[in-house]
Structure formats: C-alpha cells, structure tokens
Amino acid sequence: MAAAVPPLSNPCWARLANGGLSRLKTSHLGTQFLAKRLERSTDPTSVKAAEIHGFFVKWERILTAEIDQIVRI
Image (tube, rainbow, N blue to C red; front, side, top):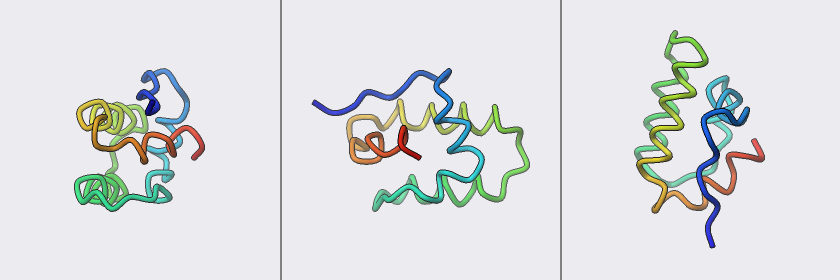
C-alpha cells in the first residue's frame, strides 16, 4: 500500500517549502513546475507549505513515489 499524504502539521511540509522540494526526484511535470514556481516565490513558508500539501492531496493517487520521498527530505 502506498504511503498516505502526511497531515499539514507534519514538519516535512515546511522543509519542502524551504527548498526541499528541489531535491524531490520526480518525472511529473506539474510537480516540477510547482517546485520551480515556489523556488522564486516570496510567500511565507506557511503559505508555500499549505500549497504543497494541497497539491499532494489533490494528486495523491499518481504521486505515490514522490509521497514516499517527502517525509525523508
């Protein structure tokens, strides 16, 4: 069974929002675009973390390999 998306309270989302998303290995184009856009964003970490979490909740079924990685980043 694939890993579930961790809750927004999990510290992995802040790590992803603070540059960790660029270390995610993915061939999913939407995830790559999200990473590049957030890399340039001046939004607060909490806003970026919530956006990343929402993205992974929406695409949970097809991003199983990426979800397995996010808690280790």
